[in-house]
Length: 442
Image 1 (cartoon, one colour):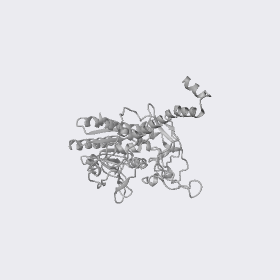
Image 2 (tube, helix red, strand yellow):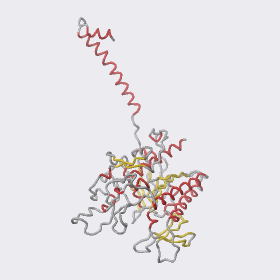
Image 3 (cartoon, one colour):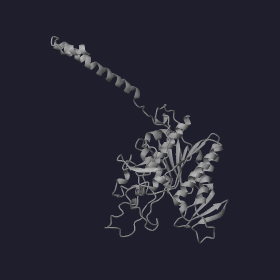
Image 4 (tube, helix red, strand yellow):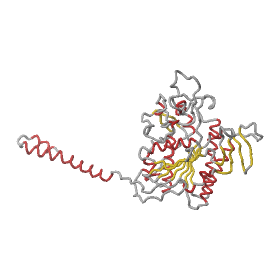
């Protein structure tokens, strides 16, 4: 190095020779480094993904056979050691915001388009769930679709099942467009979307009790009827087609109901004019979930090697300040801190029942194999988000006709704005799918 320095400083050496030497000495390493980086980039560039060429099947038939797509090296191929209890944590401010908005997603129900309907505050969009002992990764749409390739994922249950599925579709639509390929004629309560890019089906089955029953209505009885020992065949008859099931129930069990077993009434809830034994809804909720999970296990067992993954979403509390049917509102604009609210009372008991029944079903499923079960525990994180509901903005510009509120405005304090806190449920859903995929490879 010293001799080189003297050579460059020696005035007796012609300038041209010194310049050529300098260029060779300095620029050669730069050139070699650039060549190395270029060759490295050629070995790490991403693979082009080819959509399946098969057509989506009819709603109640089997899905297309898996396409002969190439092997991909994706995130799902990585060893997945991460384990996290997402049920406890806190909402922290996050400037990154949601993956989508109402103008980029066409699957949002009108009553959940809170911004389009005139909600003036946007702060509820900038919070992220932070579990106590780990971090929850941001949703990765392409990873989810890779894990859903050639599969059928069914959301079964109440309107929170629909709410969660619409959130999921919006996030997935940021990388691939879903096609609505089926909807029921009049009520839109049964729908299916198909992603040609990954040959993946996502279905919605309206079944708020999961079991056979009749919903109360303005025209008919004011109470529900539920047959606690018979699943609703509207979804159960398609069970062979499902690879993953997400179950949601709870809020309909709070309404007046009459309960049947073996064809006979065993009691009722809040039906004082009927000559039945009065009972609370906790036992019926437990029986319904046990009937549902047992039926899935037994029907899959009868098919031999047939497999299915089942996720039970825990109860998500509403946030009415006052009675829901007596002008109750939810006008808060920020989350509660974790020390402000605890899961207790009715919400705690419902969550406990759901977790216990999943654990009981796991034991039963372990005897036969083929059925995996998991809890999607959203009760705590949902409890802390009173700001995430449509509230009065379930309808467009509810306060546009004058100053103040001339008469009570109906509020929705059960469902969730899209985008909104419910997107977090699908981040946890994706984490469950990653763990399941890793276990399949062990």
